[in-house]
Image 1 (cartoon, chains in turn purple, cyan, blue, orange):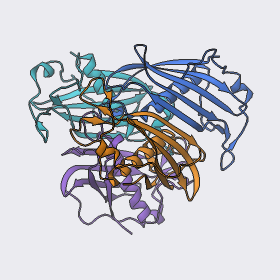
Image 2 (image 1 turned 60 degrees about the horizontal axis):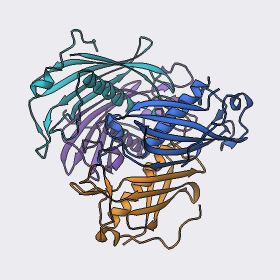
Image 3 (image 1 turned 90 degrees about the horizontal axis):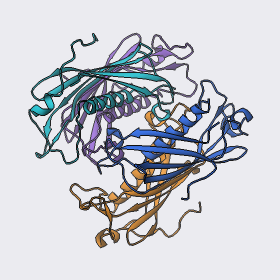
Image 4 (image 1 turned 90 degrees about the vertical axis):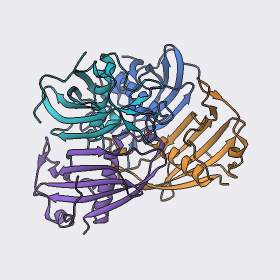
Length: 140
Length: 140
Length: 140
Length: 140
C-alpha cells in the first residue's frame, strides 16, 4: 500500500515544440504515467481488460515554473492528496535536480461503464484499501 | 480587435484512448488551437519566425463534465479573461450542441528569448493593443 | 462513391518539434484524418460504436521532401490505390501551394473484433461498394 | 561504437486509441526513442543545443503484425542498416516476449541548418566514426 510514486523520465524529441521546450500538454501525460505506475506498485491496473469500472479525469491543473528541454532527465512525484467515496485526488511535482519545474493536481472519479452515459459510483473497497493519503502534501 | 474566438472541431481517432473517449490531455491542445486562432484573427502569430519574444504557459486547468468520442463535433470558445503587464489569462469552454463538455483556463507570460533562462518582460504595446478583456466571463 | 479526399489543414503548435518543423510522426496522423474524412464522405464511419469489425493498419510509409512549419497551411490528398478481398491500400500526397511536401501509403485490413486475437475477414460488400480505386495514382 | 540499441518500454495509456490498441503513429515514435538512445550510447546527442547541423527524417515505414495494448511491455531494437555519405538508414523490430509485433525502417539525412531551406551535407567524420553497420539485418 503506497501513497506516492517517483518516476524517472527523460524528455523525448516528440515531446518538444518549436519553442525548444516540452509542450505544456505533455506534463499532464507525465503525471498520468506516474499515476498508473503508482497503481501498478499497489498491485492494480487502472484499466484492466473488460473491467466494468473506469476512472475518468474530472479535473487537472499544472503550474509551470521552468521549462524542460530535449533529453533532459527529470523526476515526476505523484502523491495521493485526498480520497473521497467516489474520487481520488493527486498532487504532483516535476523536478530536475531538485529544481522545481512544475506542480500539478489531478482528480479522478470512479464510474460504472455498464451505464451509458457513465455513472459515478463508490470506489470498490478492495481498490480504496490499496491507497492511503500521503502524510505531507506540498504547498502549492 | 477581438476578445473571443469560436473554433469548430471534430474528434480525431488518434485523440481517443482505450477508454473510448478523448484523452484528457487533448483538451489543453484544443484550448491552445483556439488561442492561436484568436491571435491570427487579431492579425498576430503567437510564434513568428525569429521572434525575440515568446509566450510560455504558466498555468493551465481543465474541469471535465462529459466525455467526447471519435468523430464527435464540438466547439471550443476561448475568451480573454484578464491582461496584466506581463501575462494574459484566458477562459475556455468546450461544448457539444450547447451541452457543457469541459471548462478550462490558461495563463501565458511574455518572455524575452534573448535571455537564457527566459526572462519575463512587459507585453509589447502593439500586441497588448490587439486584445481586450471579454465583457462577460463564464462562471466556473 | 468517392475514391479521393482533399483535406485542407493548418499546422498546430503541438505538432512541431524543437527542430522547428512538424514531427515526422504527424504525417501519419494527417493521412489518417484524410482517410476518415473520405469514409465519412462515402457515408461511413471507420469505427462506428459497437461495430463488430475493425480496420487495423498493416503497413504505413512516408517519404519526406520538404518540412512544414507552425501555422503553415497545407493539403492532404488521399486516394484509394487498391482494394483486395480483405485490404484497402491508399496513396497520399501532402502539398503546400502545389509544392510536394511528402508522399505516403497506408494499407488497412478488415478484421472481426469478436475473435481475440483479431482475425482478418473479407470486407463486407456494403462497405466495399462505397469505394473504388482511383483512376490515376501518383508516381512515387 | 555501437550499431544497435535495445529499448525496453511499456505502453502508456495515452498511446492507445478507441480500438483498444496502440495507435499506429506511435510506433514511429518508439523507433525514434530507440534511435536517440543509440546516439546517446555512442556519446552523441542527435540535437545538441545550438548545433549547426540537423537530422531530418527522409523516409519511414512500418509493417504491423500484432497489436500492443495498455501496459504491455515490449522491446524496440534498432540497428544501423546502411550509412552513405549523407544519410543513415536504420532497421527496427518491435517485439513482445520474442513475438514479432512490427518491423520498421527509418532513413535520416544530415543537413546544414545555416542554410534556409535546409541543405543536405556530408555526415561529419567524427559522427560517422561513431556508427557502424550492423552485421546482420533482419529479413523484412
